[in-house]
Length: 289
Image 1 (tube, one colour):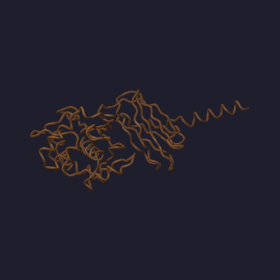
Image 2 (cartoon, one colour):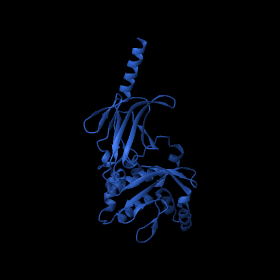
Image 3 (cartoon, one colour):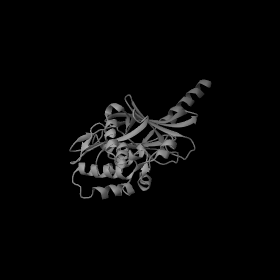
């Protein structure tokens, strides 16, 4: 009898952690569901089925590469990129049980074949969250009106971001783990931290069909976790941190946070120092979204 109970318990646990596929690439577990119907476009959506006070996590991995995200506890979808290329992804949903301990609630394997390798960098996701009605998107349309090349559009958006958003030192001191930029709030207040600069810039560029990455990592010069952008244009390919781009008149930097401080100082000496800061030897990339 005891052996039967153990077997039944094991079967129940297996059922709880597995998913039932329904519809087109939709996977429903006991506590959460994963919508992979847009995997070819570079993203999936995940939601907890009910509201909860518990902390939730999503881990997406491919091979040895792993990304860990928070999941909202309001029962609403969060969107996550599939930025590790074609292949088999494992998606897991976790619920906090105590302290820093989490229990697995759903595990799904998804085979991904992207329509375009840059697809994940063209869509809205948790860290670069925008819609067609976002004020930030409307501003991007306004800034790029009449521009005919991607470089011209990048230039217009870049100049706006570094000229209008100032660094928020107080926010930098108090920001908590799990913080997510709200781009329209950043645009309205005209201030933010590096994460905000990079999210706004990526959202603006993506809304104009220009692939843009939000990159996070470390800078030995800044003594803090940092965020910046990488941008793709037909004219240049990927513009990365140590590859400043030429807009036809001058060279420009891909770290909008530092470039903003330099531009707003109106000091040639600060700009000269900034150019040294952007040297790739000072940067270590950890993640890209």
